[in-house]
Image 1: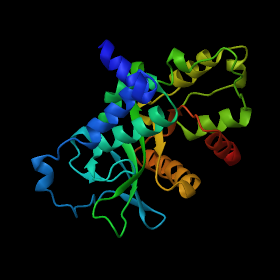
Image 2: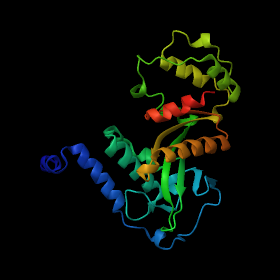
Image 3: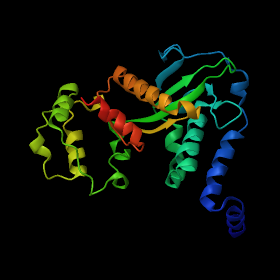
Image 4: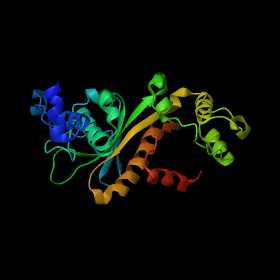
Length: 260
């Protein structure tokens, strides 16, 4: 192990970078299964919705059981949907943003309900993944990152907009949310109050690990399509309120510009 660590530092600079590249290597070079060799590559999901003419979006209940293959910008050959999403998560969150904590939790991105946005191109029989996001129901709220201490900060100042609280109450199955209920409370207390105010918990979910990939020149456009497709897909599935963690300032500004 000492020898491996020394080689990792020599070649990659540190052990974490080496582990990241190794995880990507395993996915990219995984042998194609016999199932894939006999798969109808032209098969499309008839339940997907189309956004902006050539982009498809859908909610997949469990990506680990989905038999379709997809292209990504990080591999020359298509991968099973589950592997494709894990690869994109590693490349964007861990390699690009250096969120090495995710190395211990890659299995979260390999199963369960996910939103996917993809497109078919003239050059490929397989669609190309543009965006994905993990959707978690309230039945496993104990696993939500939204309520994890890692994503809490005592210095945060909540935005207690009265109109926003009112519209939130009207748009969702929530008990009334008077502004006075949240005065002098921490962000953690406010978030928990919001959650427990939801009368029908099946109408709520967590959406995290939103990825955007594809051509860099279209990054903002793909981000817009992903946000729009995700909102539409969740609304169509009966979700009225979504808890999420936003890292990109552009996304925060996007939601602020929408106001109510």
